[in-house]
Image 1 (cartoon, rainbow, N blue to C red):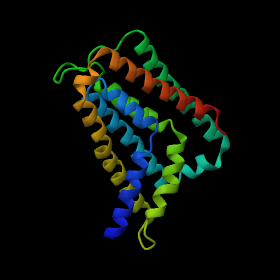
Image 2: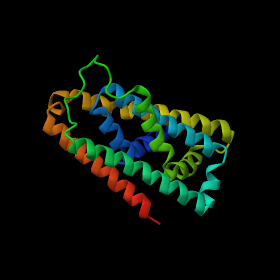
Image 3: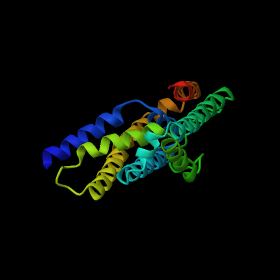
Image 4: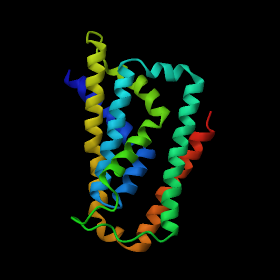
Length: 207
């Protein structure tokens, strides 16, 4: 059981370590404040848990089986990614790269907005749904009840990633002195916005 659990956590680590839209959004939000970054993480992991529940009940199989449903969701997800990317690039262009928030100051972005951005980005990604369906069942022991075990694994997956991505938020916070420089902040906004934009375009045109 212990070896099985370590294998599952190892797989979760590899998944989280793979660069993707969620990673870029979390880093970008963390440029504003640790609070915004951490709430974005919570939103993203809520989406992970939701897809885990959907996979546990077998509903993601419908998405995988229906080309139309997948394509509709793919285009919607691409629009979300492109929207976040354009937003970041416009902010950098307008010179909206003011110093990062001091600790304890009123948040530039509401907590709900940060949480919603992470949740929306995850739920709008059809790959996350199909991946949950293919990933979680591999770690259900043969003699274990499938539904409760998959729900439990989905919860562990989400909680583990909260801790993992929380390290990203902490690391960006440690670099506040460097990031607070306007030109550095602007470049980071440009890089994160450009990556999100390219990821959105790739999702829109892929087969």
